[in-house]
Image 1 (cartoon, rainbow, N blue to C red):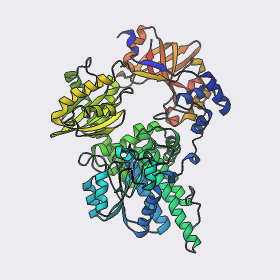
Image 2: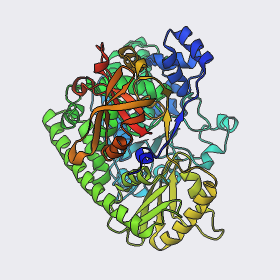
Image 3: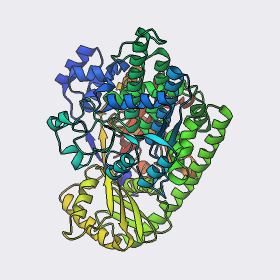
Image 4: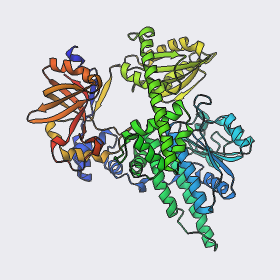
Length: 638
């Protein structure tokens, strides 16, 4: 192995701004280093940096600023008071499942608190393989036959015009809550038109359309997750129910007066503080930016998950090996989320809702064990597809000339190809589309690299011919997308996509990059720095764990491989008279290159605690010595 193969990445170190560092650190009484980390995350003035660090629940906006939320809340409360059947219609991913569970529990809580009755509340999660994503006319017909009078969608429905029409024709009031981008006909009308007719921007057949991304929205934060929008609707329902109860009290009937301005009854507030844990689950798992309101929901929600008495949450944590541990965002992404997702990917997504709404601990444990089994099955399927996909790439793809990887197979599972595509992007650093074919049709998942906008590329492919469309359908965003295509059109689509990719990436550097927050000396690393970084918690999209780099260090002592098949790398690193224990997960194959260079190297890393059982590898509250800190490698360079 050549020495230069220690690293194949280009390090991009964030530029320093000493004057702004000083301004923010002096105003907020924080270190210049923490100021720079905040600046790297887009907080480039004192006000925004302070808001980010504070992130209290009081900074959440009034949910009544969302479009159609007031009239939708009133309709839902009418349905509850009159005993009409309400069905919550969700998506099969973690965001949709947690949103469904949250809304079901919200409606049940309101019925108990205000009407002392158990209303007819149901939920529906479509089958991924048989029905696909979102609302369907067939499902609406079935729900109508079952007596549903109000459908509340969560995490889906914003562009479901035909389905909304079907619901209206069947006498169902459809209330859509979603966070996905609206289609052109929902964005075409500005607020002037909307002021005359709140639904004038497109989906006229829905009773209400609640989405912060609508042109008609006054809500100041656009990036809520699906469960984030559902949480806001739950809060609005609590406000409206509280106002109704207050009015009843003033009329001499039972009830308690509460201010309608963001206030809810005490017991319902307790529900919201529990439900914020579900909001954190979906928000983190859906990889929305953990800034502003999402950060608040994640921050308080993780605490709620840690202390939850919800039987389903407790069973899920226990089977994931997280019982009695401090819950951090990576646990949602790598431990809790995949187990909930597994049901929707390879089994029955309803099981996830059953778990999160379970009231019996034995039943919750039984469902958690089922999800664990499904997750292991998903992992086996994923491993088989990944192996098969790598073989296909070797046989069918010219890596030197093809800008993108597009492969398909009849045996691949549609629910898992997205995960495989993500893995292959990391390996080959180019856009990847994996298509699972079934009969004449294929369903694909696409993943991309930072500098390549997948959605724009698919639009160009769809517009390539003037007389026909190469894709049956597609949707998504810059880094992830889904599509359906006729099997016979896949070879032609592969050619077109590669042509479009070359046009888009002309002159672009295809070298993988690693973004570095700060270059520091090892002597700068201390327990106080480690504690201060805790202010940035929780980490996630838009707020990554800080990555530092240090040049001209030396691996000392025994450089060793450890783990299964020697997959990982461990050694001590020294600069001057300062040394730290260092681990490189998945870097075992770099050991010879490191030895050939006599241990001399530069490293990129994050700080971690070796006491993972107590601190989950991130933060410790009683750091006193450098020995309490390890460096977790992200890259090694010469």
